[in-house]
Image (tube, rainbow, N blue to C red; front, side, top):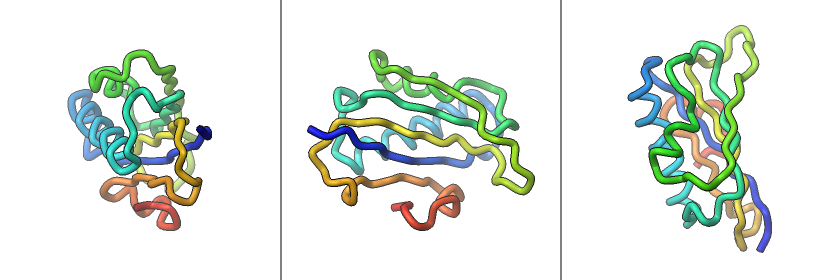
Length: 120
């Protein structure tokens, strides 16, 4: 079993806790589904949020999905002029037998423009 990394992102329409829970939950669910994973396959998850998001911690959405025994951490994304606003990014470390090339990185909605090279 290898350790792999899965990337993903979603752009929120507004900075509201319920909306963040919904969108980050959808992102995490898509990452798990598209890679055939369960919470038991997760090693850890890093979340970053752009500086314009203040309503909640993205990790709270993971806990609401039942991801309760996986180490999670949140950090603030760099404040770069012209960067896409209201974005939550994910870097999940997983255990998987899949080759690195078969990992599905998930960029939902407008966030797909962030990584056209790997977004699926």
